[in-house]
Length: 496
Image (tube, rainbow, N blue to C red):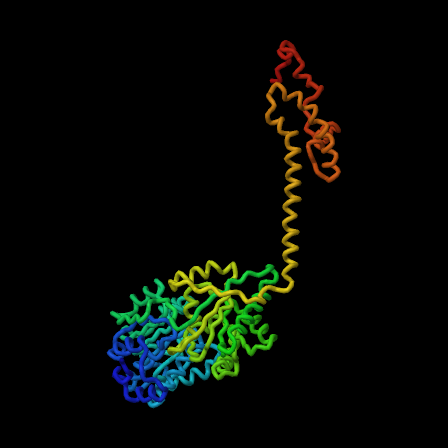
């Protein structure tokens, strides 16, 4: 079995790893660290929660042990898709570089530019940033990327989902061609493969698991939920979530509850708190300081339930998460892999449960197709059916009576229809005889149209009888020059 001491890491880095309590590297670490130490480009593909952060942090610190950073010119660059993931990489760097003199700077949104400018001006060895904030500093003239020796792209598929691919391509073009590139992701979309083919030079591909696979140590299940009525769907779904939590009992020490929409994150968190559960929301619209406080509270155990959007689905390393509850089925199948990867980390066991409404069944099928496994179905809680369920049944019965009345109306229409049917089948000889029978009906309908303000054919006929604005011809008046005979016209004197 490979140990960290066999990976030829710097002795100071090995001491930091031992202080952190790690002895055996994970498969992705054992496969990616040796080629990274040799200076080769690395393309790492592994399911989430397998230690990809240490796969690039440890060799980076070992390679940067010599040299000195210059002002505004970082020696290495780490790109992360979210603020939380960037902050987590910074924490890992502090742990593994504690016995070195390397410096770092964290560039994320929600923090003043002034403090970040001061760090950059001093010169940093490792720059950890989100793409948007990094380009903001560059466009302000506060940062140069021509001194980057090592560039890391973490959670590359998340970059694609968030629309960062154009920014990533621009950043690649701002860095030296001779840089070393480390590229890590849990899934590999075609767009990601195009970027790796463009910007990586003969990379060492380390794939320790099939892309988009879930951990075998995670117990999965899905509850097929059907509301009694559409207007009660949200209320009943939140009740099912609470019953699901209660059903897990003491085994659910803490949990991350994922919602697809930010507004649902706030509503679910408020509902849980109202019912006595210790829960707090986290999503991209919250202030950065509040997001960091919430994450810190969840890590130290003061917050039991973290209701989150997909901002917490990628890369966050909170080792002791016992459960992941998908309140909504993810719209993108890959997000399911990342969400449930928040539990069962570092070899621990975990549980991932999901609520699936009828409208989410297509997304569920996409997930099962991606992971190539059927997610076990769970039995609905006995109390999930509302006490007022008979009321919808009565309404359903009333709804069934409406088609009966509509059918009776359609039957009456069909009975009346034969009176007009012979008109279509009558021959040309019999047609004049049928006209007098239809005339009284028109005379009865026409006054009603006039009373409603309509202008039918009867209006036009009345107007012609009244001598209204209808066009007049020559009438009985005949000009004299027309009435004169040919002989009379011949006797007309020549005007010349």
